[in-house]
Amino acid sequence: MKANTVNRKGVFSKSARVHSNDPQHLKTRITISCTVKQYISVLPGEMIKLQGFEGDKIKKKVTIASPEGHPFEITDISSNIGDKIHYKLKKRGKEYTIEVKNRSTKEDMFRGNIIVKTNSEKNPHVVLPVRGELKGKVAISSKILSFGTIDTTRDGFDTVSLRKTLVLRDVQGNDLVIKKIKTTSDWIVTETKKRGARQYTIVITLDKDRLPKGQFNEKIEIRTNYKGKPLVVDVQGEVI
Image (tube, rainbow, N blue to C red; front, side, top):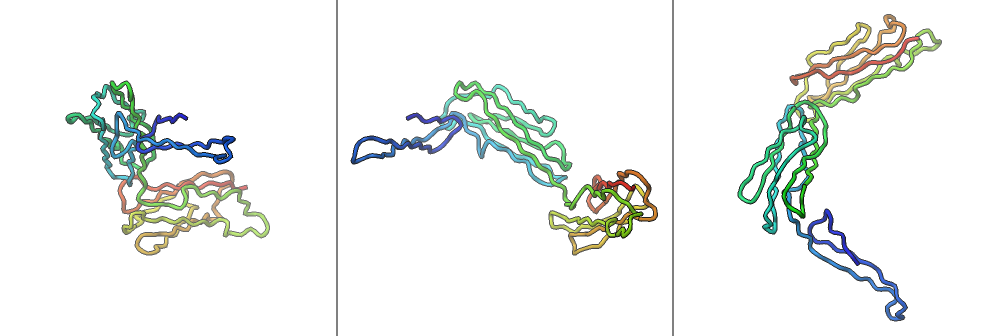
C-alpha cells in the first residue's frame, strides 16, 4: 500500500481492508500513519482573505519559512491580480514575509493567486490564493426593477402593477440617512419611509398618465450620508 503525500501536511493515515481465505481472519484492516512535514510552510495559512467594506484599507501578512531548517531562497514573486492588490516581499533572517493590501477601496469582489518561486527542488513554487471582497456599506434589496409588459388600456388594469418597493439597510449597524433621490424621468415617483435608524423603504410608482409608449430603461440614483458614488437602480419595462 502506498500513500500519496502531495499537498498534505500534518498527521496523515490511510487504511485498506484485506480479504483472505483464513477462516479466523476473513477480513482484516491495515492502516499506515505518518506525519507529513513541509519543506516550506506558510503561516497562518496559504489562503489570503481581504474582506471588509468599501473605504476600508485591508492589510494581511503571511510568513514563509522552512520548518526543518532546509535552506531556500525566494527567487521571484508575481500575481495575476496585480491590478487589484499591492504585495511586498521582505526577508528577515531565514524567513520571508509577504504583505498584501487592496489597491482600491471601492465595492468590489475579486480572486486570484500570488505565485512564489523558490530555489527548493522539493518546493519550487508556492501558490497563495487571494480572495477579496469589499461590501457596500448600504445593502439594497434589488438593483433592477422590471415592470415587464404594461398595457394600461387593458380592461381591469390594476395600477398596483406600477408600484414596487425597495429596502435599503445599513449593514454596519450605523445610522442611515437618505440625502437625495434623483430619477431620469419625471413619471417615476418615489416615496421614502424610514424604518428605525438603519433602514428605509422606497416605494417606486410609475405615473400611469405620463408613461411613454415603447421600451424604457431609466435609472434612480440614491445618495445617502456615505460619501462616494450613489446607489443606482435600473427601472425597465415596455408600454404597449
